[in-house]
Image 1 (cartoon, rainbow, N blue to C red):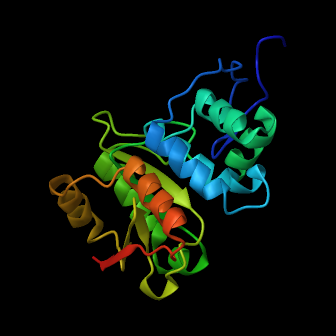
Image 2: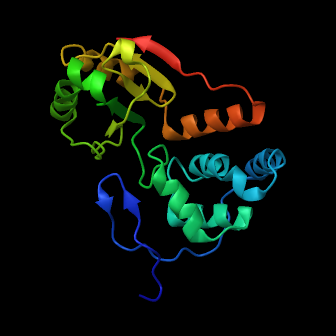
Length: 211
């Protein structure tokens, strides 16, 4: 259909076709300088696509609307469809706005055996949302994710750049109460932290806590 882009895969399946975005720029001067620095370390511009998407996710408020994908495509001189295909392959990139606290609950084998789905059901009850949804006040988004690589502390929840281990249905309510009182760890904060890691060349490190 003329005037629409390809159908966009999301964690919940296939959304409706998205309008072709108009060309524009939301990258700040700092973001442009960061991207140019990262690109300089690769043999070709397309190799910097993942870092570019993190920069875009930060600059566009924690998610990637079509305009963000178009800007990455323009700055890396790649087709829009290629950028969209890469971004939609990874669950770490958001296609919709997320809450201030994005709760990513691991439900892979170890966590599932320990009680991850009990934790999920308790969160659904406490927050009155289902996986993939955001609370009406915009504070929490709940997502089911693949392995978070901390099986020794199952069940594990990632919130921004923090890991919380040994979460159970009995103590997850306290985690929610604590998060309401703490400074936000938003998707924008996470994207900025990962961008800074890319610039420094150091291994990423999340803050790890046990509930």
